[in-house]
Length: 152
Image (cartoon, rainbow, N blue to C red; front, side, top):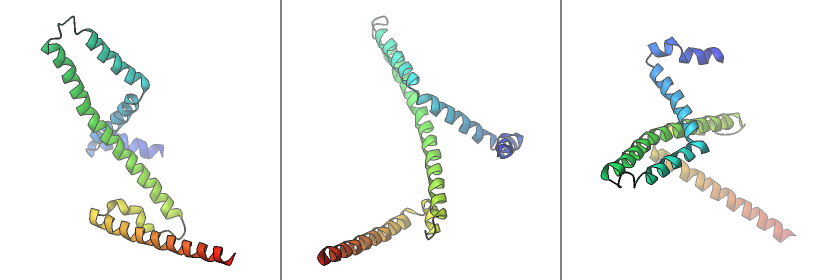
């Protein structure tokens, strides 16, 4: 496993044009981890409080307001990409784990393991089929339970 990790992040990855993607993945992961810590939130609160308290010093000028507006806009813009990257990785990890479980369960429909690759229309059709199956199963269970209570 260590060899595979080293090979992906080594000179061959950079030569294949993958080095930038690997660097981004590492930086995004570390930044997301850091951004989610309480100390980061407290630092952001401290910065906003410092900015607010400095208002009288700068006469609540347009430049004073522009500093916080520009800063928060830039941070928000960058965080959108960071959050999206994190969600993409998490969603893929969940899909892989679910696929492994589906494939491992005897009798499960293995083709459902790659359902995320279907089009929106195909997903809706599949959803309708599973919904119908669930309703049939529920009706069957209710009939059986009804039969048991009448026999008692």
